[in-house]
Length: 484
Image 1 (cartoon, rainbow, N blue to C red):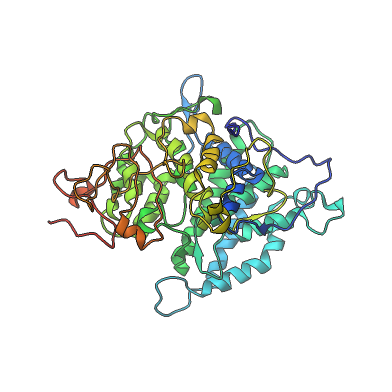
Image 2: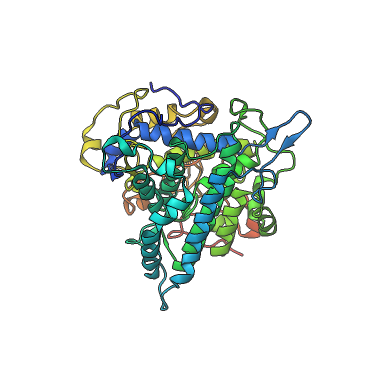
């Protein structure tokens, strides 16, 4: 059994006094077996450690008399010089959009002018990196005799975080690349030394949130297609981390990462169900990352919230509070992003996030299935290993998919083992879901993970709330609109 990741342990920094050989990040994940190895790699461990570190910093902080919260306006958050410089870099990237206006002409996805934006950025980024990241970071280990520098590795991850200029798309794999860019700077000692959580909060609010705003503008300007999206059955077409950090913002106050609770909410936090109320979303999006991401969905999608975002609607029914949602989001990120071949296949590995076995992980058994075809979900033993390596406060209280060992999210088309009729749709008591057989045959017979902590599937258009007398909503390609 692999050791669990320690949520209290920050991402380790490299020793500047030791020789370090940098490497040009390269694609390593080519099939399902590579995904399995990735889940036991040092790169995976470092990525999860970094996410847990940033997540813990976003929880409200207990004080002797009260508590402090961290809003997006940053009144209570300190921004160090490295954070401010990265913020300036993002502003420059945003300004380039004006130099590459979208190409006129009707097209639903993928405006070719995105390639012009990307080309301009690629040309200017080396100079901008010199201005945004300290020279001591970019030249870290330069005298080791290698041809690749720290700057080369960082630029590769940053360029990979804007989307694909070839496919004209953007998704959670690109978002992951940006986290790796920031994690690489951390490992190289490029952020300010501060009390635990202080610099991390500055990174999330002063860099990650502006990055998400840049990405949203890129998506709107160039109509970038969702990359690796599950469509209506996915959490979000493009992003995931704002739901992690945003739910942490609304969770109960803590004194240290060791105190992270499994349930509860900030005393004055909005109700999770408020995501279905546009007026509340517009108010809360100005100060919270979760609602900011929900607000962007309202900007680009029309119709009832439960209909275009059923998974987020399911999650909004959690009664145990934002801490429960935060824990579920971490589990889901592990299952739906880091464990999915279509998402992680393009993530490159170098020396900062390396393609080496983590000594605390156990080698999974080899099977013909994993060796001969790319899989969308790892085999049970390996998925369990990945799940077991998450901190106990993340994994406790969740049922698992018996096929993958990963957490489940209830979906509107969930089949119940006791559903009436061979083709009946219903909801299993465990919240475990699978596509109906006839539908799965047309979609590579894949299963979808979800969350047992989710609300029942909506079935009525009335105020976005379920109607007890209506049949469950099916997939868009099978749905019959409920009667008025």
